[in-house]
Image 1 (cartoon, one colour):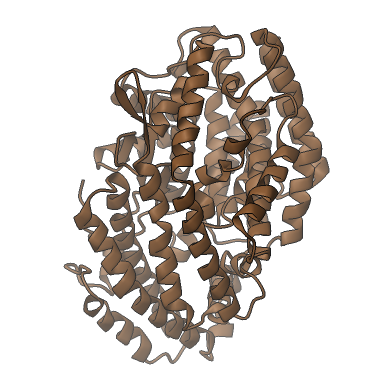
Image 2 (cartoon, rainbow, N blue to C red):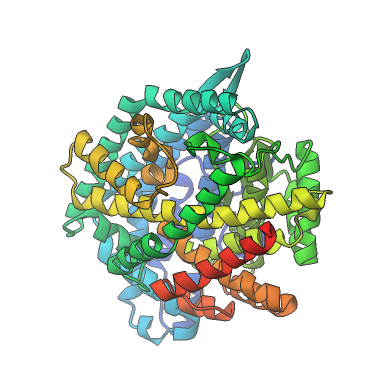
Length: 574
């Protein structure tokens, strides 16, 4: 795997071919050029914007590789030192210079003359960034960025012992799919007890992040970090109240559907009480599905499945693998989670996940492949900002791919019965994830609107919230101490606050696209690709419209799409 960022023909016009980053001195001449260069026409300004975009892309890719390396091995001290040096000594300089250049752009007499269709989204983001910038926040933001990465370190070191083996939590969680109920119960307790061992460290870490984020908001002139975060995330297309309405819609329309699912599960398993360790086993108590036998088998099947949707999709993932830009298997020391990392200079992203031979791996691979394909399809857009999508758009690409590929999962399952079980599992997950998204998002609103809360306040609010969004059919009695800390499992709360509601909006969009795919596959795929290729050159609602759907999260829309999923599930069960 090559870690060097190679200057391409697209960036070489402004940047030398042998450019590398080890200190601020490597970048300073290019920022000085942009700061001092005469701009005497709209054409000059457009050239200036393109050169700045190329510099942004180069720096972005260099920092991305640094993050990838610490993700692959959290115990790689050299990689960690390199990352810390960049965050502490290079990034603050970049942030300050970025603000100066943004100010130069918005105060240029030619700024208002830029073509709105071409530059409208970009200029809106830049103007917002200028409004939000605060010198006092540069060092605090650096501290937060470094401190938040301690979460990944904590979880990457968590293992449990099972039958003489140490398993990562990701691999241990696959045992919750096994038939032996007593074994599942033991694994469930071990996983949650292991997480509780680090309760004080995790809670203390969040206290630090909360305090610093609140200070950032105050410095920028906001009353709270929630409102500041909405602005930094460029949420121009919806408000906090829209999120609250979405939470309510999920509680009223989706939680009742989960109650139906869990009653059916309890009856199918022949249980008097449905316990949390009964939620991942096959509804009829059969052996867990294993969709692949090795990592190479997994990737080969994934590529074949994606190729059925569109041949180019499989080709993109194959190319990434050939370039060493896919790392699948879970291992000790590897950071938790999964991601697709866009690489704006080379145009070919990096796919990271923690596969553990479970059905969930299939879902994750399809999801991250959606992100990767989205990244690749936008590689030729001129501005790097157009290739950096808001999550409402990027998650639409990823969550839609999960459902589109569902139609072709026979690549992974030879037996019709297994295929049906996998599809049922996926559709159940579509419904299950929506209440969890609502809980995580609503919790974060409360956290940052009430920054002076205590650990006990936090626990009490979280516990009440979970109860209101959890199916009443599942019996958690005796597990309350685990439920109190479930939020500790959610990386987003620590590393990327408020990045989660987008999954909910995108899930609704994905269901809508899938419904269209069932009616007319060719048209649905054409619209899906058209939307992806737009990148972030148009408002969110316009991108959704290009995909043939609406950017809608009203109660009536949630009810309509929830009913569609329920009917699809019933057809599979019957």
